[in-house]
Image (cartoon, rainbow, N blue to C red; front, side):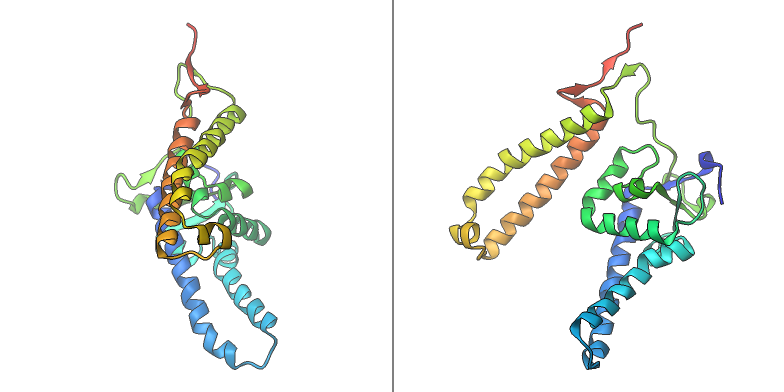
Length: 236
């Protein structure tokens, strides 16, 4: 247990992404390895699916709860712990964290760019943080300290107002940016969901561009730099 949170060092976004990709690779390999033996079992398909789900849950929330890290975290020298006490998460919190992470996907990771302790949404949902196991062994520049989220000398809009501005900008970008992509999409794809390779490529490009735009809005909005929710200099 580590109560001295000031001594903690947090990984950069890229290392968290690496851990996620490693976990995804492990899960995919587990499913592929299990497919043939499971196919030979003379049991209902629902039971087979449950066995695969159980294996997946054991690999991430189970390992996080018991060892403090998933396989991806272990390989990248990270651990998940309670943000307040430094203890490992209980199984229920680890499962909730896993569910939120998979529901939000990459969007959850974007919040690392603005939160004080470099937390994702799934971290904030269960009050956890991801830190280096051995920060003293991490090369200079690869470990982060707590972030100052508000610049001294400025008055910031309320968090609710900043969040509302970020969402509003995201919706406007979705409408304005999505219009040309909709116009380029074939009628078969729009009305009958029969999409060709060009349609799929357009959807992928738009999804990527919107994700990047939302990340920019998130960072600027939280720092009080979006019109409608700007920070102002504190009166002397």
